[in-house]
Image (tube, rainbow, N blue to C red; front, side):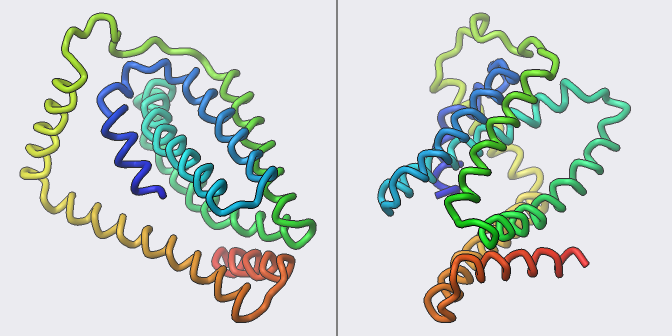
Length: 218
């Protein structure tokens, strides 16, 4: 779902990210994500869940570039490198601790309890974003006279030039992205194997995920 969502959002919104009111969009995306996650509790139907997951990935695809732009405006340039270092550490830790905590919630309660907790936390995240300062847009959309398609073609030309001049960076980015895609696929296979072949219950699988996260950290 994520690659499709990334392609669609980049094509439609990629040239307009800098024109958004970043704080309002970050708040709105958190609230929408909270609602979408909460809707997973209503109906356990594969088509309905796939539909919600797709739009969750769309929100995530929008959230990442908008948040990066807001961080550049929020953090002073002198402290940006230090912030990026700490941000990488926290993000890496969250990538490992998050599934471990989700596993604990599943083992203590149920998958639905873990989903409900995630929905509430997303809503709290949106509330915290409202406390952050507001910055004016770097680009005023009313001052831009070019059409949408002109902006898209201009972005494609810039991308083509960048790729031709930075082939090593593109190859490295492609390989790292491929690793993340394979890792995501492995997680799905692991869940199916644990539930179908090993016949683990929800609480047992949650405990397995928690132990895996803790072992990786140690």
